[in-house]
Length: 92
Image (cartoon, rainbow, N blue to C red; front, side, top):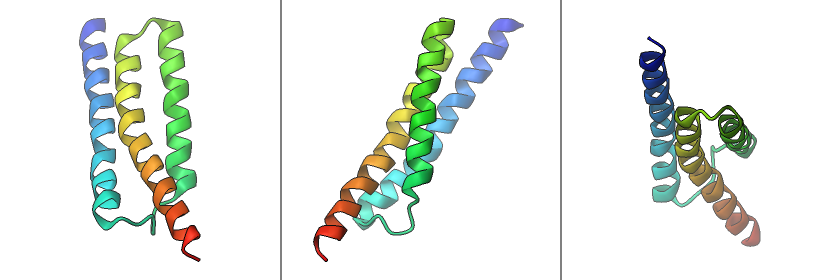
């Protein structure tokens, strides 16, 4: 039963990572940071990094991989937001 819960947890984390992909694609296509909360996505990225560290200490591969996937997708939104925001502010 413990293994089943671990697999379901890992799949849930993978789905969590996939939820950030449409936002990353939208920012990439529109080439703008408008409407994106840097505090929100930056905060998510920090929490995911903490989750990876916690997973390492707990020796929980599902948590490590799930949080790493989420950090990759959410971090992409964060990085694109920073990039386009800096670009927009330089034009002023």
